[in-house]
Length: 128
Length: 159
Image (cartoon, rainbow over all chains, first blue to last red; front, side, top):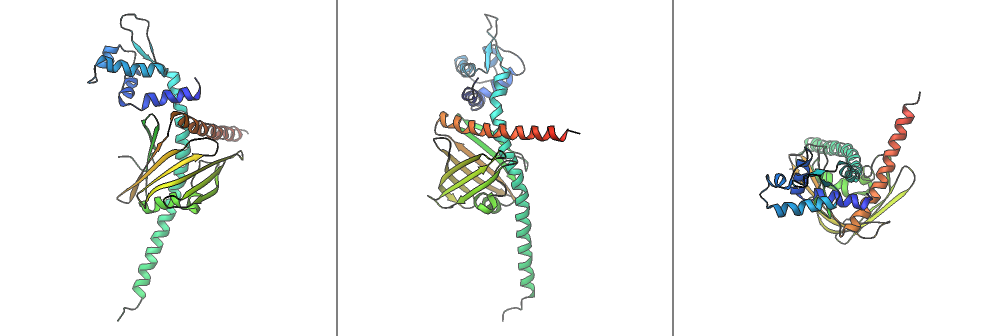
């Protein structure tokens, strides 16, 4: 799987709540289309459409049982697909942790300025 | 409700990434930290990276220019133009990387509640191709970063 394909897989999987739920269900074991459709207020053709997206993205595959045709999760592509999201997360998490420190400093400075202002106000003689 | 310090990343659409983070500071300070070069230089970029060029012309139609230098000395340049500024609650800008064609629309919303600020950043890519190119560059940089960590770990385990 190249990067473009794995990105497609990630977006295909995560951009839709129904598909996220389907993957969540399949994480606990394979299931037929009927079983997958049960928890959703959706027709089987609608569910099948989502399954096709997931299948094209390489995230799920079909089992051998010709009658039930159970779908199952392909864990490896999903893990690979999530790699880039981790890198993205790392970039921002590390940046924002540095920002937390800076904001503490800015808050403290602002607090000091406000304190000085109040003190100056107290000592200043009242205007006549 | 998100806790302070927790970064949440979601994918609301096929060309969109959304990021939410709570900061323990009022939003005028968070907004300042996102728009003043002398402050941006102190936090923007992951560990080991530094913002060697940072120019910001904070007005509608004004631009910005960032160059991040990595631990390996490699530069990653980006630039953009502001579309909308409602200080200190919202900004929209277009953003592009030197190494890739295409630009993304980035919307930042700052919401303050009880002295804390929730920042929501939504990045909308014009096409899947641009999305892939930008993210791919991020991955390369991210990978370099993890190798550094590995090197650090290996050297610290030496006796």
